[in-house]
Length: 133
Image (tube, rainbow, N blue to C red; front, side):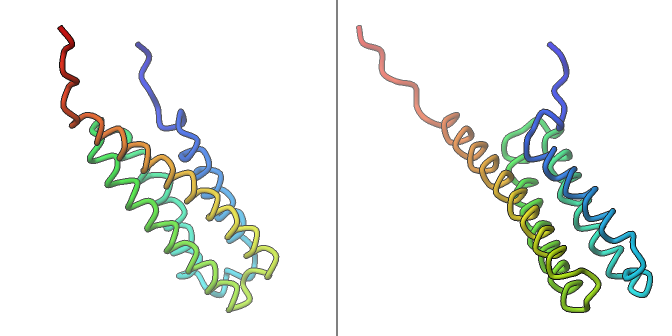
């Protein structure tokens, strides 16, 4: 059986695209004056993607679910940092809106996956049906 990879997951692919978008959006001149905020934005975006991948590689539902919850936390952190960058006029209102929309889409995909993993985990603990003999 071929090895499964994190890029099999739609949520991971969305997080990867989000990380690329954040890195590109923070490469411009406005962020030269705020290197710490640029680094924080990039780290938060990268954390979303890498946390999903780390959980996926653990091969246990419990650990995967825990990492997905952590990735959701990273999306909240990223969204807060985007708001700060907009307030400091490092991102335009439209640029920040587009980036927040990507964060919302990505967090929705992660949340859906986390709920599916949680349901699967619960199914594993259901008693076997009684035999009808």
